[in-house]
Image (tube, rainbow, N blue to C red; front, side, top):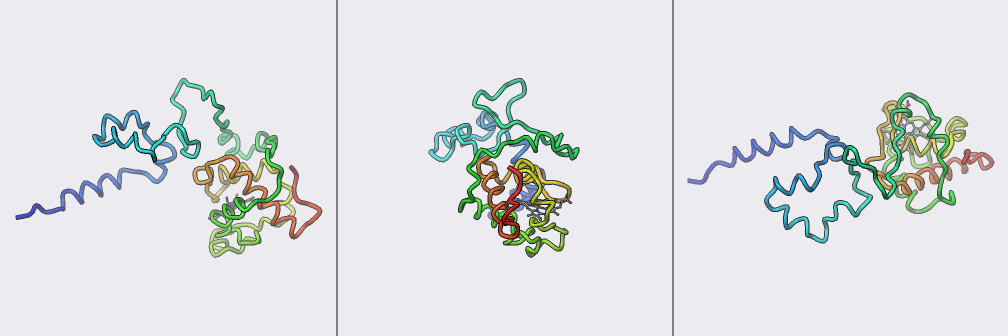
Length: 193
Ligand code: HEC
C-alpha cells in the first residue's frame, strides 16, 4: 500500500504558514547558512543562475558590523516615516530627467493600477484606496527626491515599492515618468529637480 501524502502536505503547509510575506526582503537567510541546511544547495550554488552577491537586484541586508565597500544606498526610512522630508528633498536626480520606456513599463506595472495610466488617480483600484491624482499642484510641487522616496518607502496606506523596484536607476525612471505625465497637464511646471 502507498503511503498517504498527507504528512508531506501538512509539512508543506506548516512551512508555508511560517513564512511571512516580507521574508524575502528582511529575513532572507544568507546562502552561507543555507548551504549547511539544504543538502542540494552545494551544487545549486554553482549554477549559472545563482550569483547571490553579484547582483544588486537582490536586496540583501548587510551583516551587522560591516560596511558595504561598494557603496550601499543609505536608508532614510525612519526619517521619512516621521514625515520629515529633509533627506528626501536633498536627493539629486542623477539622470538626465528624460522619460524612458523603462519608466513607462515600471509605472504601468506598479503605479497605474491605483494612480491611473495618465496619473489622474483613476486606476481600477484607485478609488478603493483613495489614491490621489499625481497631476495636482501639490504633487507637481514635490521634489524629485520626494517622488523617489515615496516610490521607495511608500507613505500612509500606499505601500513601499523599493522591494519590487530594487534598482535605484529604475526608481528614478519612475520619477521621470511621473514628471512626464505632469508636464502633459502643466507644461511649465514639471516639478522641482
Ligand atoms: C495600491 C494603490 C497604490 C499604488 C499601486 C501606488 N500608490 Fe501612490 N498612493 C496611493 C495612496 C492611497 C496614496 C496616498 C497616501 C497617503 O495618504 O499618504 C498615494 C500617494 C502617492 C503620492 C503622493 C501624492 C500627493 O498628492 O501627496 C505619489 C507621488 C505617489 N503615490 C506615487 C506613486 C508611484 C510612483 C507609484 C508606483 C511606484 C505608486 N504611487 C503606487 C496608492 C497607491
